[in-house]
Length: 271
Image (cartoon, helix red, strand yellow):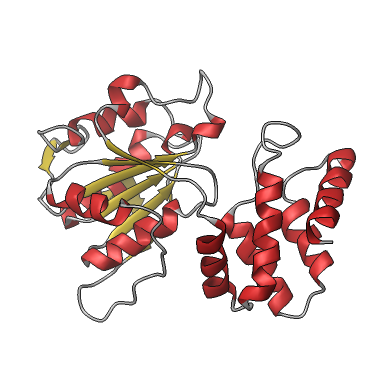
């Protein structure tokens, strides 16, 4: 079944998750929602894509169904299936079907990880028909105006076997995410961790130094999420060097030599 996190954000009094815009992404999302356009978010792991969607759902007062895609995720996991309940066979909607019925936002995180039959289900929802056929129940659901489909993926992990076909990509309005500027990222980490700006700024500087190694010794650089983890550990009393090792070095590599090199970069960057 789909690994789903459902968040219901009402229009009255709901807290809006913190998100610091880095460009025109908020306005673009609002335009896409008003014009019933599907949205594709692309960018590195931990740069804020999922938080952005949660922020926008709360901002717009719409329910949000988030699905973390994986290589066992099938179209039936999204649309629904018949299940046995108390001796009866009962149809149970999947998160995509629930989103269409509710006029919610459905967010498929790392959509390229899902099986290929998933994109077939998405196609009629991502053109002017905005339809979801449920073959097993005989229903043909028409998405209400408030429904929105948002998908994301990390282009850094793309390969021939796991990529979006051009015919699928061109059904979406797209936003490319990157990491914030050092000043903006410092503000985000301060907000999320509670650590002071003068102590966060060196961590952000180190994060950028490690990101510069991506494609050389590292497959992926330090995410903003990892910087928040590191700052949170330091705020809680862990020594800085131990926090850096646990949250900015160990998650990046298992290779002892690469680890040693990253620690050297940290030593040179922080002094």
